[in-house]
Image (cartoon, rainbow, N blue to C red; front, side, top):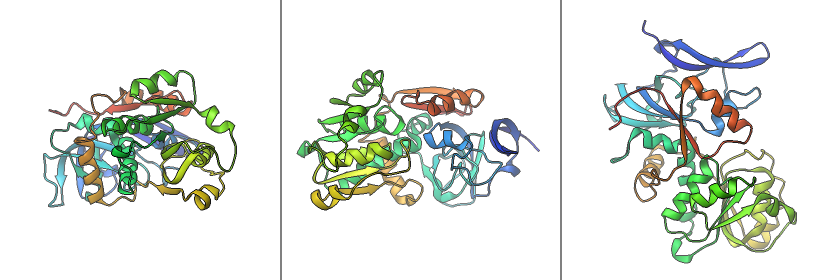
Amino acid sequence: METFKAIIVREVDDRIEFQLENTTLDDLSPGEVLIKVSYSSVNYKDMLAVQKNGGVIRKYPMIPGIDLSGIVVESQDERLSVGQKVIAMSDEIGVSHTGGYAEYARVNADSVIPLPDGFSLKDAELYGVAGYTAAASIEALESLGMSSADNPSILVTGSTGGVGSIAVQMLIKAGYTNVTALVRKDYQVDVAKELGAHHILQASELLSNNKPLNKRLYHYVIDTVGGEVAAQAMTYIHENGKMTLCGNAGGNDFPATVLPMILRGVHLIGISVVNAPLDEKIKIWGKIANEWNVSDLVHFQETNLENISETFDALHEGRHLGRTIVKISDTEDA
């Protein structure tokens, strides 16, 4: 049987190990669609997948990679045809279902999104789950009244990471003119300015006023960090303001009080990519490819399966900026 390359994570004694190996189609999870993978990407969740106690992978061995783009080579679903260019994400891909860090992926049809017109397979993975999450956060806020016409003040936390950096760029592309980027380290200031942020806020400043309510500064917050940052950001929101939450790089705990909610009517909105229905994914990918398209602006690096551990290390150590895409094969992308 023909073999192909894949990153495989294994539990060995009390350790988690991963390496590039030869594998076969028989080692892939079941699904209606077989895809020859062109690109994947590296998300924070992918880094956690190769860590001991990372809390991502449900069973071993596993091929990680929570998103991918490529070309359908087999399909048992009438909605998808052989030769079609597609995106696949969520639906437990790279968690309990073999994922994108392989030359082939077999996935469930409901996790597959047709590539939008005018979009390349590489473009798709410049965004990946991170970009989709950024777009879903903006979509959620706009569905609840956020509009560039009102010139609202918006704070984006984790602004130089994968989700945050794309959120900043999409907001500006959508016409918002009062976007503040939260940064933690001095070298991130220049990066946030390059992204187009109108204002820069240091995390130390945000966290220095540890009060149940602080000065009203922001109408909306897109939080990508979680933990203490999210809890404190909430205290700066105006009456009836809204905050989305989509990440936990700053911790799973949420050391907050209820006062912003009961005294200012602040709304908290969770963004769950895994549970998004297919029609919602198609709608948001359409916006990513059109009115919110920042493909030519996204800060990214390109790597391959052989060198992917370097990106994992950068994410783990807090040194990673923007997006990293993983080129898997030389599939024609034009």
